[in-house]
Image 1 (cartoon, rainbow, N blue to C red):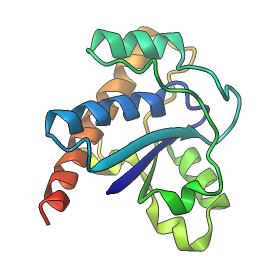
Image 2 (cartoon, rainbow, N blue to C red):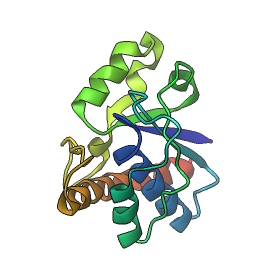
Image 3 (cartoon, rainbow, N blue to C red):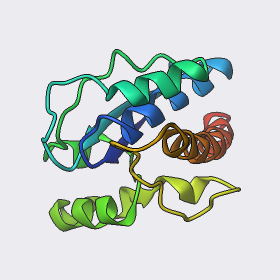
Length: 158
């Protein structure tokens, strides 16, 4: 079984959105039992809280339910537990690499490395922003998760 951890700053906007998107895309492909998907934050600003209301609304507009996600900070054990640790922006990437054991650093990547339209770009943090900013983040997350699913489909066949 594969395991993926999505990481943003506080785990209340981008990473729970990515978790919800990937879970649904995997379910649509019948791969949900082959991949564990979770999310966390580099900071504990909102630990124990649900996703930000604007993120929940953006998800709902696109037919996703992310209300079951609860914010938590990345834990030391996550670096060994997850096969892939995917950051939303370069600051998240740097924060993760700064605390990861050397043996786990190769697992840490930018989520958009898997997308086509926004390949390699940072997903801007929409926290406290406009509806359009949440939609932009969602567009980028959906693109990257679609590419990630294609990779997971290929590796699941092996």
